[in-house]
Image (cartoon, rainbow, N blue to C red; front, side, top):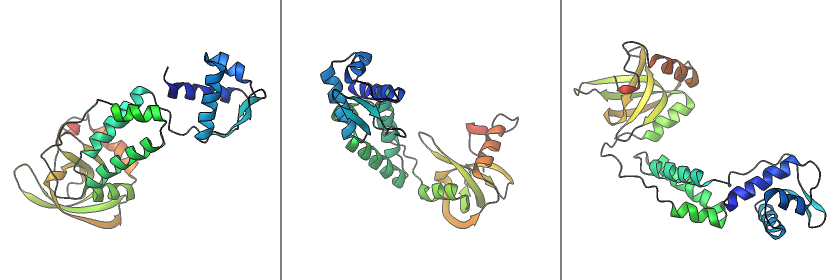
Length: 236
């Protein structure tokens, strides 16, 4: 068991005891020495856990304590690093910077042993795709969050251009392309738009009349319907 897992177990054991519990009882339950138990309690207190008591009197965790997201298993560390590294290599510059910043913030507050695991992980991300967008994907993400209409020019696979006004509600990140999922006012249906075929992106500031979660649910229900492209391709 790693030290981070042991600290997490200690928090969980303290949560089960409503009254102060002696250090020896805690040490026996965890299978560690009393010295290790005292050191782990001091570590948790140093990280902000409201553990009250002292050696010889017993310890109790104050109610309402929410465990901070600083205790990770080895696989959780690998998932965090791999995901952050993948996002950091995406052409969405603001999202890439946010991923790098988030990983740095997590590393700054991790215990020393977990920080070493974070730095030493050997899961790597390959080079990013050559398919680069001319639009700012941050604008698309903002429109999705705010439930606002977007205008743009779209070129299909044959190069034919058309002006679109859409209700964006999802953005899919594939290895080579990014795809916006939206309700298209021109087609009066759900459509998938490759970001590298979009240009002249124009935020309208106009709220579309439906909630994005409702549209997402409805769109998912259409993916397996006969005659639909679903998630297998893009359409305009």
